[in-house]
Length: 194
Ligand SMILES: Cc1cc2nc3c(=O)[nH]c(=O)nc-3n(C[C@H](O)[C@H](O)[C@H](O)COP(=O)(O)O)c2cc1C
Image 1: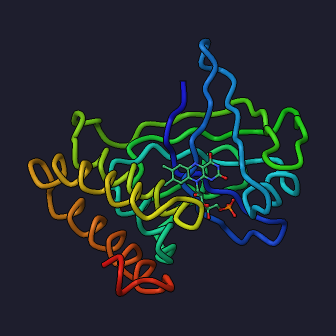
Image 2: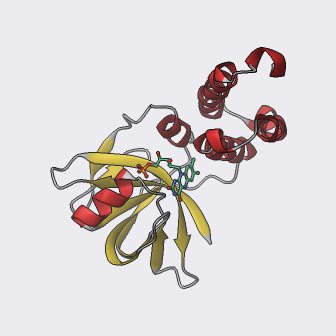
Image 3: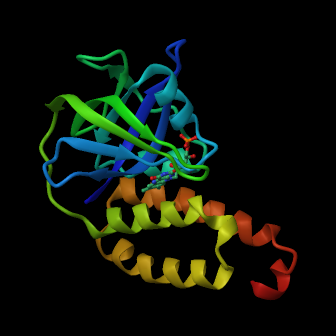
């Protein structure tokens, strides 16, 4: 299964780096594979310090924020490893790197859990949170996708968003839509397509 998490790594100087990543979790739940596309600070940091923290987080502003230049989220020290935890995480897992399956495009960083802690209850699924996550993934691929596909997916995702969003989801969505509008305006035929 792939879990959408916030991965926090740090370099050897202790500088933290936050990135949303889809983590492959083994059926037994004890192996976590992080797959960063090169070039990647997460990859560099994990190779350097061999640790990472997976943050399970329902504040989708962190996902949208990281994709739109808002990376200054409150952190606190990890409990068993030298690392940082997202202060708003519902739970987190501290990881150690076990082995690397190298690849020119997307290496596999196989990790094992050394510690997991719960901080707040999971309060159920929300469709607007799904919409924000999917829109954030679109933003991360903006320059690879045709505008028509982006527009069609956003129109669909907006349905669940408008029916179920709270303030956090609306704020996250607004950040993502601003990036899409700026992207549209930057296209050579912007006037014709809009
Ligand atoms: C929900 C979600 C999942 C993502 N999963 C991945 C992933 O598995 N691998 C990846 O390289 N980028 C992924 N991204 C995009 C990265 O977060 C983004 O490109 C980031 O800048 C990568 O930073 P890095 O330098 O730490 O690799 C994802 C984005 C979102 C919103």
